[in-house]
Length: 188
Image (cartoon, rainbow, N blue to C red; front, top):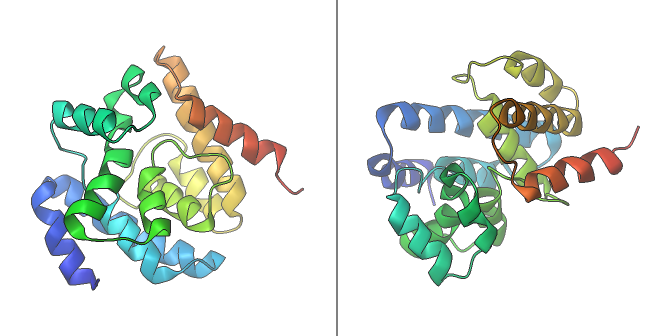
């Protein structure tokens, strides 16, 4: 699917602010893909569609999670997590994208997962560091991303986990497992 076609499919589902975020994620994902050897075209498409379901009604997302037998733990955690797996399902169903790598990059862009593929890492990190993001620690992670993908991922996950802990929010188990997996398997 060509970039303009994909953007035209996504735009009606996003606010103007989220569309600008999507463009930033797309450009960042392409840069990271080229830097680390992922497929830039797949990175482009996964980035364009990563927030496809972000503004779907919570009830619709909950229904899809139940009907499609997605991880039932999702329903016990913040609904902000839901748009990733639901988005992967809807992108396949509504946009006709069948590439499993692209769909998994969309599916895991909020929680991560142990043994993430290169494309999944690129999309997760691009979503975190795109130029429109402004929060404590993001500049450090942007700099790390230029040198070491794994270090940047670890830092982004650590920041996210600490942020949630400071707000007394639960941390999705896959995120903790992903962080642990990255730390345990990091090559020094």
